[in-house]
Each structure stands twice: as structure tokens, then as C-alpha cells.
Amino acid sequence: MKRIGLLGCGAIGTQIALAIDTGKIPGVLTHIYDNSKYAATELASKLNNKPLIVENSHLLSSNPIDIIVEAASQDAVKDVALSVLQNKRDLMIMSVGALLDESIYDVLSDACNHFKKTIYLPSGAIAGLDGLKSVKDELESVSITTTKHPRSLKGAKFFETSDINLDAIDSSTIIFEGTAKEAVSMFPANINVAALLSLCGIGSEKTIVKIIADPNTDKNTHHIEAKGKFGKMTFTIENFPDPNNPKTSRLAILSAIETLRKYCSDDIQIGT
Ligand SMILES: NC(=O)C1=CN([C@@H]2O[C@H](COP(=O)(O)OP(=O)(O)OC[C@H]3O[C@@H](n4cnc5c(N)ncnc54)[C@H](O)[C@@H]3O)[C@@H](O)[C@H]2O)C=CC1
Ligand SMILES: O=C([O-])CC(=O)C(=O)O
Image (tube, rainbow, N blue to C red; front, side, top):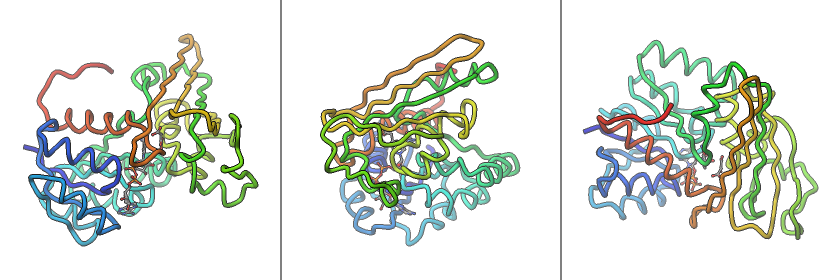
């Protein structure tokens, strides 16, 4: 059985841990860590098979573990990703925006090669990456329009320097238009999906992002358009937000669980 370490015990981390505990993911959760001791203790209390709570994030990969699952933040990725690979563990990353920093991406990619380890990036809150990967060399444009309720956008760095008052928005309003690179740095907990699109497609400077705050929606909607010599693809994903964290869509959690289930299983693999 694969041994799993979990970094981040919030909305995604909790559901992954429960999926392991109930046998949906055929692995064993041996160690967990969260900056919030409360979050880690609270999670452990929900599990029948109790993992050890370690004292800092680096202690996850110094234990005999097969894979570290990150479901914490871009800062957590920047802090631990390299040492996880150096300790010869695989890594699954949810805070994918961290990889848009080219120096981080290159270092991690080299480390995967050098230590013969793999970084897994689940498709998260979107669909269509299988197709996008296949047409990568023929892509001319990729865009994503994300619509969320204002409460799902609260706390983003973008609002530190913007005059927009989310509480005053009473109809669907475009609050950001720019590149994926800018979007991911301004909305680090909202638009990791734009980082996934960028890495699969034409890069973060050419991938165009629009973010809309809509007080009348109960969904996190991602509309993706990709065009090129191959033709055109459009994907619209209307996600229900997680009840514990409205920024995060239910699909992101299910995608993380499915990626980890595949990692832990010897099975037929479907799709690109
Ligand atoms: N790839 C994708 O499609 C998606 C990615 N995400 C990203 O996944 C990550 C987790 O999402 P959620 O579980 O919904 O967030 P959450 O806010 O519910 O939970 C995150 C947990 O990580 C902990 N944490 C944050 N920084 C940490 C650090 N440096 N070291 C240790 N613990 C740390 C927090 O205390 C919190 O308990 C976030 O970065 C989020 O932006 C979320 C949705 C979709
Ligand atoms: O869960 C979502 O809809 C998307 C999200 O938060 C992200 O990409 O960071």
C-alpha cells in the first residue's frame, strides 16, 4: 500500500483524508501537517486510522512516505516542493499557481529528472486538459472566464490595491482582465486553474483570464476557449463550491481524490 503524507488540512485535505480512511483511495495516510494545529487536530479526530501530526512541513518527507499531497497554499509549495523530491518522494500539487514562477518550475522539473520522482498536477476545478495537451503544438489562443460569487473572491491580494468593493457589487461585474501570470499572483487562492491551462497550453503570458464577480450565482463557473490549427475547443464547467470553502469547487476535491486513487492503484488508465 502506498504511504501518503498530507500538507494542508482544509477543504481539500480533509476530503482526501476521508477518502483514504474509507478505502476509496487504496493507500494509508501516515503523517499530516497544517500551519494551523487546530486544523490538523480537527482532521485527525475525524479519521478511524489516525495519522501522526508532524511539527513542521519538512518532517512529512523525512518520514518513509511514497507521496506528499499538497493542499495548502502557493507558499507551501515554494517552501517544501524541492526538499520533497530531494527526499525521493513523489509530490501532488493543488496550489499549481506556484509553478508559474519559471525558476521554480525549472528547478522542480530538473529535480524530478534527477531524483526520478514525479509531480502530479490534478485537473482540479476544470475539464479538458486531456484535449488541450494533445493539441499543444497547434494552439493559437487560450482564454478562461471565471465567474464566482463575490464571497468566493474575498481576501484576494488584488483587492489590496483596487478600489472595487466586493460588498457593493449588485450585478455581474468584470473585476479583472489580464494574463494568467497576473491573475495567479493577484488571486492566488482562486485561479490555480489558469496555471494548469498555461502549463498545458501556450504559457502564462499568452493565456488570457477574465474574472467576474456575480452576486446572483451559486456556482464557480469556468468557461474555457482554445483555438488553433486543430480547430476550436470550448469547455464550460459549472461547479458547486465546497460548503467549507466557497473559493474551492467540489470538482477540485474530486479531481484530487481521483488522481491519488490512480496513483495508489494498479489499474487500467483511461484518457490522455
Ligand atoms: N488546482 C485547482 O484546481 C485548485 C486548487 N486549489 C488550491 O488548493 C489549495 C487548498 O485548497 P483548500 O483546501 O480549499 O484551502 P483551505 O483554505 O480550505 O485549506 C488550506 C489549509 O492549508 C493550511 N496552510 C496554508 N498555508 C500553509 C503552509 N504554508 N503550510 C502548512 N499549512 C498551510 C491552512 O491553514 C488551511 O488549513 C489552495 O492553495 C487552493 O487555492 C483550490 C481549488 C482548485
Ligand atoms: O475551485 C475552483 O473553482 C478554482 C479555484 O479555486 C482555483 O483554481 O484556485
